[in-house]
Length: 445
Image 1 (cartoon, rainbow, N blue to C red):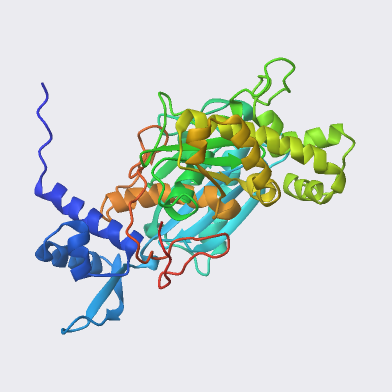
Image 2: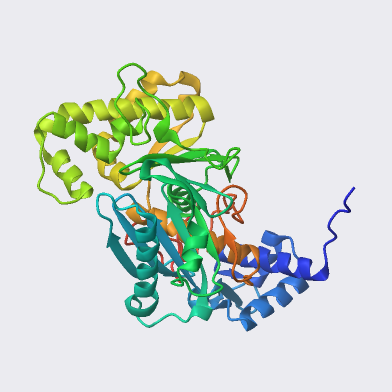
C-alpha cells in the first residue's frame, strides 16, 4: 500500500499563502487582525504570509480603518496590476479574446468573426493566436510582458477530455487535441499555463463566483446562444460526470416523434427549439425575415416584430419544459439563465418561462427553486475562462508553475464555489461593462 503523502514545510507555506490570498481576493480589503479569525491562522503566520505576499508584489496596502482604542489598522488587498489573465471564448459565430488584470477589469478585447463554416480547426487555432497578439501587444494601454501573464483560459463549444482534447459534435470536432495544436502553432507565449474547458462550464464558474449564482451551493447555470448547454453545481462543486460531458442540457429530448433535426445529428433536442439558430430558423419557416448580418442582430429584430409573438410564446413553453427537467433531475436552489441569446430573450420571456416550468416540474422542488437572469452579460464565458488560470494562481499561493495544461474533468484547480461572508468583495465583476475596481466594494452572496 502506498504511503500517504506527508506535508512538508513547503506544502504548509504554500497552503497558508493560498488561504490568505484567497480570502483577500474574495473578501478584501482586510486587515491582518481580520485575517486571523477568517483563516484560522495564528497572528504570527498571518504576519509572515502577508509580509511575503507584499514583498512579492502580489498584495498591497489599501488604506486603513480606525480600531477600538488602538492604532488604525492597515487594510490589505490583492494588487490588481501584479498579474494578467487572458480569457478566450470560442463561440459559434466569433472568437472573443479578452485581457484582464487580477481584479478582472477588462484591459483589452479582440473579436474575430467566424464564417458560417467557421470551425475549421486550423482557422480557429490561427484566430486565437491573432487575438492573443492583439490584446497582449496592441490592445492594452501598454504591451503586457509575458512574465506578467499568469495563464490563458479557453472556453469551447464541446466536451473537453484529458484537459485539452475537444469533442465538439455540433461543430464537427472529434477528439481535436486543441491544447497541443495551440502549443505547436507557436502563437502562444512559451511556457504560459493553458487551460481549456467547455464554454457553458466557464460561464457557470463566472456566474457562481461573481454573478447571479453567488451564495448558492446547488445550482444550474444555463448557456443559451446559438447552441444550448449548462453547468451543474452540486454542493458547491461543478458536476463533471464520468467523461466531463455532464451538462449537455441542449441535447435532452423534448419531442421523440417528429422532432426537429438538431445540429448534433439527433432529433427533438431542446437546442433545436430554443437555441438562437433554431429560433431564427423557425421564424424563417413562418415567413419571417431580418436585415441584420449576425444572429444577435437578427434575434433583436425578431423580438421587435409583433408578428413573432406566437413563436416567442412557443419558445417560452419549450424552454420552460427544459427548465422543469433541470428542476426534477437536480433539485437546484437556483437556475441562472445566461448566454447572449438567453440574456436577449430573458427580459421578454422569463415570466412565461417560469410559468411553463411550474406546469411541468414537480411542485415541491420547483417551489424551492428561483429562476433568474445572469448578471455578467455576454462576456461571462471569457470571464469564466480567465478564472481557470486565476484559480491555479490562488491555489498555488501566488506561485504558478509554467507550461501547465488543465481543464475538463478533475483537472481544474479550485473548482468549488468560494464561500464568502457578507463583507466587501474586491475587484469582482458585477455586470457587463460594470466591473468593480479594486478599491470598490460589492456584496457577495
